[in-house]
Length: 408
Ligand SMILES: Cc1cc2nc3c(=O)[nH]c(=O)nc-3n(C[C@H](O)[C@H](O)[C@H](O)COP(=O)(O)OP(=O)(O)OC[C@H]3O[C@@H](n4cnc5c(N)ncnc54)[C@H](O)[C@@H]3O)c2cc1C
Image 1 (spheres, protein in one colour):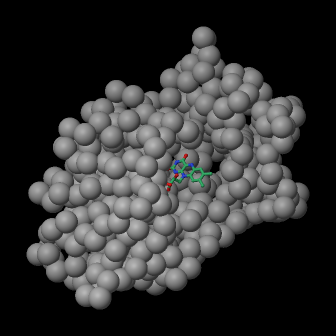
Image 2 (cartoon, helix red, strand yellow):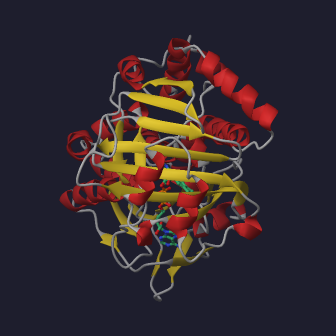
C-alpha cells in the first residue's frame, strides 16, 4: 500500500515510524525546505514515553532529555500553591517523564526516519486535495508535484491544515484569548537549582519554566489579550521582561539568559473537536485532527499516541481503510476531545483577571490532594494504552483528567 503523509512534524514522523515498523512504506511530504529549528521545548509525559519506547526511540530521548521529578506552583509573589509529584506519576504510569528541546526531539525522529529509510520530501507544501474520478484523493503541492497514494495521512498541523480543510470543509483555528512568548535560556552556570518544572500564576498572566539541565531551561510566558493586540513589538524580550519584572526568581534571570532575537510571540489557537477525522482515503492525525491548547500539556504526547494506535488499527483491519479509520477515530476521538476541553477549562482559570476568581483558583490548587491528583492524571493520560495506570476501574474511564493546571 502506498502511503503519503502530509507534514513532517511530531505526528507525521512518528506515524511514519510506527507504520514502517509494521512493514508499510510511508513517504513524508514537508512544506519546509529543511528540518525546523524553531520552537522551545516539550514535556513528554509517561504516555508519550510509552509510545517512544515502542518505537525504539526512548534511549535517544533519555540521552537528550531532562528527568523532572517535581512541578512546583507559586503565585506571582512567591506563595507556594502546591505542585505535582512527577516521580510518583512516573512510578504510577510505569514510564518516565522527559523534558526536551523541540528541535532535539525533531532530530531524534528524523534520525530514526532516516535509519528506517523513510523518504522525507522537503519543500513540498500541499496546497489542495481533491478526489479523482475513482474517488481517490490527489494531493497537489505548491511546487507543481502531486501524489495519489492509497492512503493519504494529514499531519499538517493546526493553523492551516489542507487535509483538515478537505476532510471537514473548514480548518479555521480558534483564538483562545491569550498569547505565549516562548524561549530557551542557556547559561554558563546553573539557571535553576534542580531539574523541575516551575509554574507561576498571576492574574491574567502566567510564567512556566522547564529545566532540561540546570544550565538549559525552556520557558513560556503567557498573558490574556484580545486578538487585535497580538502583533509582536520591536523588542519582544524587553516586553516580557517588563511584564514579569518583580515576579519570583528565576523568572527575570531566565528571560535575560535568553538571546533577545530568539523569543517568539504566538497567538494561541486550538481547534474545535471534529465528528469525523476521515474522508475517502484521507485520515487526519496530530494537531490537524485534534489540537489542544498548550495548557492541556498533551499536544505532542497525543500526536505520538496517534502513531501507535494507527499502526495497530491498520493491522487489525487487514488493509480495509474504512474499518481502520473507524476503529482509529473511535479510540482516539473521546480522549483527545476531552483533553482539548480540559485545556480550555484550564486556560479559563489561568487567564482569569478577576481577583476573587484567582484567589479561589489558588486556594483550590493549594488544597488539592497530591496523591489523588497523580492517580487521576495517570488514569486520564494512560487511557487507551496498555500502561499500569490504565485499568477499567480508574476514574478517567468516567471522563476526568484531574484538577491541575499544567504547563508543557
Ligand atoms: C504556542 C504553542 C506552544 C506549544 N507548546 C507545546 C509544548 O511545549 N509541549 C507539547 O507537548 N505541545 C506543545 N504544543 C502543542 C504541540 O506543538 C503540538 O500538539 C504538536 O507539535 C503536534 O504535532 P503535529 O505534527 O500534529 O503538528 P506540528 O508540530 O505543527 O507539525 C506540522 C508539520 O506539518 C508541516 N506542514 C504544515 N502545513 C503543511 C502543508 N500544507 N504541506 C506540507 N507540510 C505542512 C509543518 O511545517 C510541520 O512540520 C504547543 C502548541 C502551541 C500552539
